[in-house]
Image (cartoon, rainbow, N blue to C red; front, top):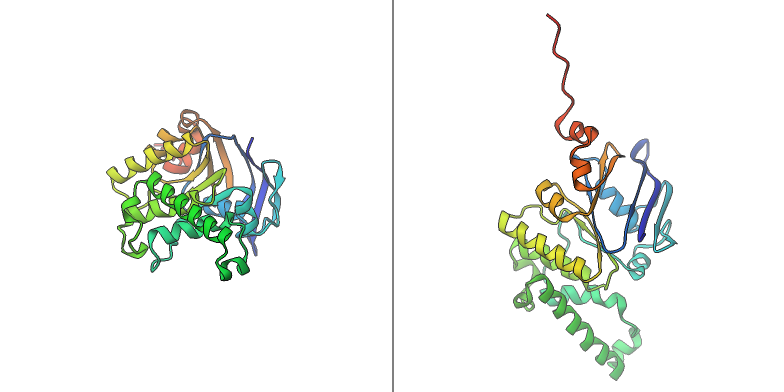
Length: 257
């Protein structure tokens, strides 16, 4: 397995946002995390990426304990993410945004950057080439020199994915990537996630579009009120009574005459 959550808990004061959540993600699969609003899904991503410290339990990536690691160290280990609310450098070009992601793999230090050494210039050229390749993969290479803030919403979503890919991740976390997209954009996203999987990158995705999730995910975990209520294949999850209740509510018994 590539990623494992073992009885993971997160408390915010007296609020228990996550309560003993466990699941495993196998290398090379697309794994979905679904559940109603406020269930704790994004909190899981924030714990995996070191935004918040874990209150209890353990998160293991490639055999290494992620508890208490800083976000930049987790990125270096091979985990990248996008955000529910787009977080781009709006006044930088699309290419520059992706190059920012690629710099986590650079070896030249501050002094080499100031002196513009041959090795630093060579590395910068390689970073630019890799950034262009990431833009090409997500289908917005023609936007390389445009300011990120000027791009349409769907292309900004793709740009954020390109920046995450530029970190050369082994695991990418996509937080509601289809939010605000129309049907055509969502289909393009489905194909893009397929391309990412073909590259051997493992994907964990949070999304409310159930049609998309049932078509792209190998396995899913369902979270409700901070607890895992189901895990399995899309078919198994769809037919789970607890999942049906979480989304549709429990039928009330008819009152007796």
